[in-house]
Length: 409
Image (tube, rainbow, N blue to C red; front, side):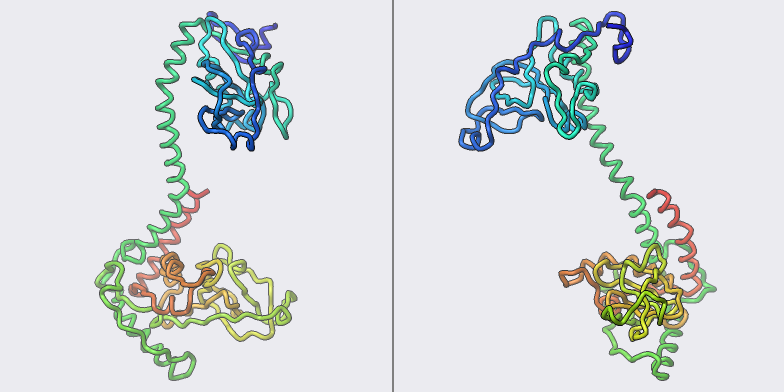
């Protein structure tokens, strides 16, 4: 054949030979056995199919070292596993694997590695049910070196394969690390933020205790003016509840002492519309994307309201999706809570703290359907820095998180 028919360059001492010139086909000795029949027989000898050993059986057809090559199946094209393998000892082969014996001056392992290294697509017919018949298999070009060189090639391959396997394991670990790294980095940034390690503390900005007292004074005023309800006092924070150390200028508080929480209320479809009539109706996580609120329903029967500046927090189904509301007023469904800061506390800092709590709150949820109750939020702890430091924390996070997003992409 013309030189251009050869698939690649080889050394001058090598020769391209058709597969059928080198190997003896023993396909006529194969015998298929159905699964039901095999299940009735003892499991003693290996039973080979197109993908290697697929079962065991109580008898054998071959007692030689032979080369088996898959005859059909998707693996001929996808090559997710080796298509050629060496069978040794006593074994049985069904009619889905070609059985091949070697002539003299041929290292069968070399041929096996060769077949597994090349694309068989030119020799395969069919795509829905790929098949490589004997005629096509016998037409495969084999790059044939001298026998001693075949032995050296096989020895070198077998010397290197353990390193390849170790590399594959290391590469898989690296891929897993790279996949998880952006999210883990984000979690670390948020954790550092609420531990007082992301920005420095400044004495001139005051203390968390001073801010807390201002918030309590504002809360009492709102209660007296009947703008918010007085809730029953919660237990004092014990030492056992405190999850980590915070700067001396910060203060631990319960969320109930610094926020007002509005639960949502569902509506029947006849009470809302898509015609921009009434006020927006926010139903769940599908309305919150990348911190923005999507509005596609309206209602004139709203009762559970959230207002501009509230954190909308999904509390059922897809839990923990958040956005700071920019609309003047919306009605929220039962899948959403509106978290409203009292007094001088950054709504975006509240969002940061909630972001770090979502996993633990979900883990503590007792419902079969994922959900977070009012009490889960109200009894949770918030590390409270001075307001100016809250703003600097939020600014630093807004600077760093886009880097995590770029890594994810």
